[in-house]
Length: 95
Image (cartoon, rainbow, N blue to C red; front, side, top):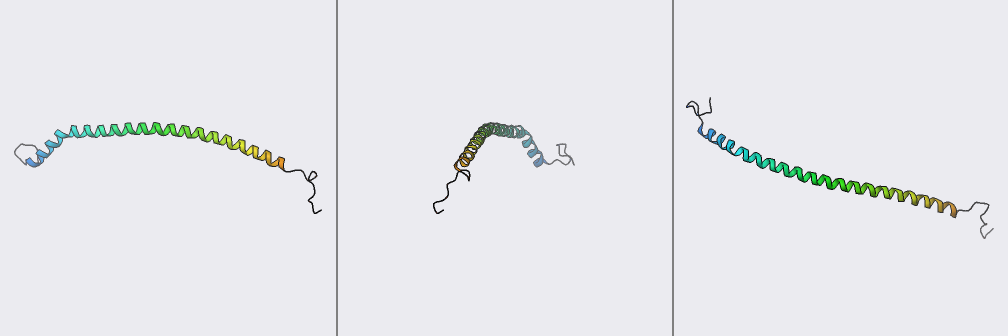
């Protein structure tokens, strides 16, 4: 069954719908293309922002690690200096 207007099996309703789709298809595809381009542009901006945030956070983490190491070293140094050797300890008053 042919769908073209040759007189045999012609479906005018289908042909009309097909013609409308073919006419509007470029417009629809252009709209879809614009939508996709907009989405890609938005995603590129978002990726750049996230990249900057990750870079900043990584630098902050590195600084915090350094500070933690320094504080840990200082804490260990003060704890060991506060405890005297047993020979240097004075006996408690009740002895």
